[in-house]
Length: 231
Length: 231
Image 1 (cartoon, rainbow over the protein chains, first blue to last red):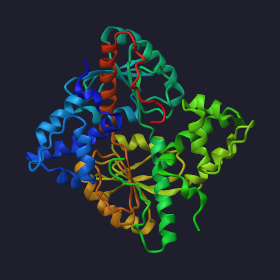
Image 2: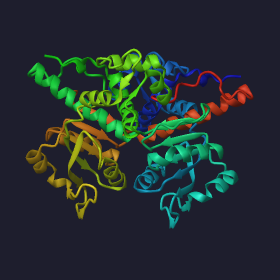
Image 3: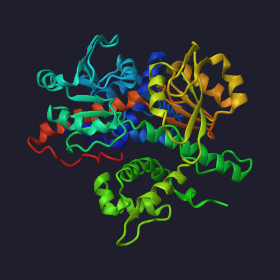
């Protein structure tokens, strides 16, 4: 039997973490309910976009009442499976890897169970309490401990090779920080964070806006700006 | 007068860094020309998607010849303004900031001219040769050196305040790694790297595929998988 959340489309799912962040902030500030227009103003969306998104999974909004913050946050947690913690490993514990460990220490949805690097170091990571093992230990570790997610913080030239190996060891999802697109079987999930692509896009936007402004002499708010939040 | 590239739509612009990466690899491997179907196979797109994207800015493909790799890469460089280097500052030089400095050392399109942290350190960054200054020096530095891009690697609770300040000092583009959505005037560009959102999406995909697979017992390649590369 299909659960109702499986009808939520991927574009809506991609927006859910942002809703979740805003709802968590509201909760923290003791706000119990919020109208779609208030939420829209905070998130810089239109009220109808919000109603459309949230209607996809049941629609908790009530005319004249708005959304129950806690209930809506709980529903998003359920859809994003945040009640589960996927066992994860990190491969490549250089500067970026270490920075991510700090970011991930309170993360929902995953639990780091192993850290690996080319050069193992008998150093315990302060966030996870884990030691950094050598990549030579990956196979045994995976077969024994069955991690399902791998965070790849290794140079692009090794990423494809290591990713295929890991897929063979049972990894089903990659958080990929290497600047290449991994070629993997279709049933394996990949979420790319292509930092270099991202900075090029920012550069384009800044340069292009400057040109627009120079052309329109004085009107900084010309049309043609894509809507920023929630991209 | 509008330049032809200004008709390139934002969704196409967002795909250009990926094309650029693949074309740069081809160049490195000495490949001079490539057909749309070959490029499609490498990039896991369809040939018609590629032709459609590249036609947006002139279409260098010739029937029976394909694309001239160097010429196409050059055209993408021009559209993305990679011949210019936007002066940039980094605010927050903790673990994540330091990791990014390594990634940015060879980056096109921007040039780091200043590093700032809550606690200034008389330590010279090995990648940029820059010292880390205190945030108290931001205003003077910006007025004097006119950076236009700021890389924000500071905690969410300070990001909004600092970003508004920086906008006042002339910053026109933010590469935002803090886990909040900045509220800024429309004419200011923001490119968010929401790491926490990204890992939640990966968790969703892995969990959801597992459920699909369990339901369809044996058919791992069920429909409903979104196309992975180029998301």
